Image (tube, rainbow, N blue to C red; front, side, top):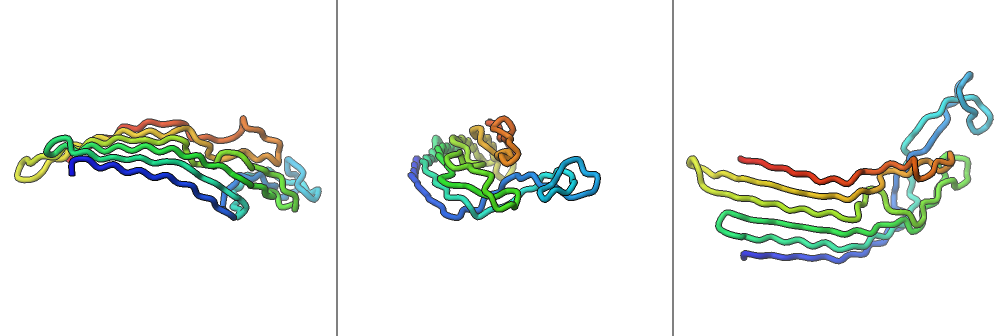
Amino acid sequence: NRLRLSDALFMVDYEDAQRSVVASVCIPREGGTITCPGGQEGDPFQATAFFNAAEVSVKGIELEGTALLMEGLTVRANISYNDGKYDSFETDTDGDGVNDLDLSGNDLTRTPEWKWGINGLYTHDAFNGRMDYNAVLSFEDKTIFYYADRSLGLGEEYDSFLDEKTLLDASVT
C-alpha cells in the first residue's frame, strides 16, 4: 500500500440548469437618471437573477495519486481538466418577454479548465505525542465568473473573471 492511483473520465449533460446572471434593472423614481421600460423615470440598479434556462455539457478528466515515500512521509497529487460549455442559454433578463441574453457556446461560469495540487505530509512521534508538518501547493486556472449584461450592449470587456491563482499553505501541529 505504498502507491495508489485513481482516474476518472466524465461527460455530463444538464437540461434546465439553474444559472445566475447579472442583470441591469431600472428602479422607477420621479427625477431618475434614466428612462425605465414603460417610459417612467428611474435609476439604474444591478441585480443577480436566477434562471432555469441553460443546457450545459461538461467533460473532463481527473487524476490523483497518493504515495508513502518512507515511514511518516506521504505525498498526494491531483490534476483535473474541465471543458464546460453552455450548449444553449437564452433568457430574458429585463422581463420584457424578449430574450436579450444568449450565452450559447460560451464557457461555463466558475469552471476552471485546469486545476492541480500537491500535498506533502510528514508525521513523527515527539513530546509524548505526534508532530505533523504539512504543505499544500495548488493551482486554479483563470475562469469566467459572470458575463456582463448584454441587454445593455456591454461586451466581453465588461465580463468578470476569477484570475488564475497558485496558493501555498503550510502548517505544523
